[in-house]
Amino acid sequence: MQNPNEDTEWNDILRKKGILPPKEVPKEDEEEEELALQQQSVVKTYESMTLDELEENEDEFGEEDEAAIEMYRQKRLAEWKAAQIKNAFGELGEISGQDYVKEVNKAGEGIWVVLHLYKQGIPLCTLINQHLNTLARKFPQTKFLKSISTTCIPNYPDRNLPTIFVYFEGEMKAQFIGPLVFGGMNLKVEELEWRVLEVFCMCSCFQGRLYDDFTVCRF
Image (cartoon, rainbow, N blue to C red; front, top):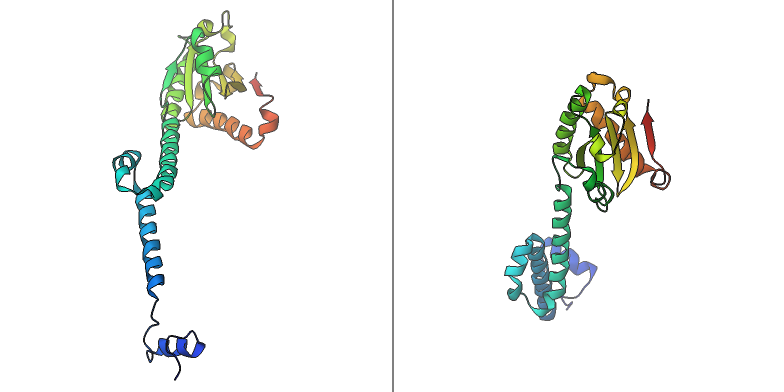
């Protein structure tokens, strides 16, 4: 008589038809399958935990889980740091010349800085500050700053105002100088946004060339 548990094509057909019962799974295989399911369950538990939850439940996991726990802890920590950087700013800050190196040149790795040199009493400067405040809220991962021109750069000529400098990782990537480049008081926030984002995109697409030089927009 043919063994019903034997791995044959005929037995497989009979099992599908319901003539033969399902193949008996050896006890060793059952134990291995159960262990694999338990491990998968533990992994899913890691994935769903926050940093605090991993710390709180650390004692509940065995020694064999330590490597996996550490891996997911590092993953959660990296995600948390990325979120902190992404939402680090969110408002138009004010700096003086003394803050320039720290806030602009040493802004940090991966940080874009948009700096507006302005003077009170110049309507277009006031308009651009309003637009930059809007953009700062829209792009909290970018540092938007303003500074009174002569406190930032001594004897900076009023005819060059407004001026916007764009930096990435402490290096200047573009500068927009003078009222004509902005189109006067008809400047819309969307237009200013496009000018800034265009610099970001160009530097991202042509890193090698544009990181060694910068775009000059001056009339």
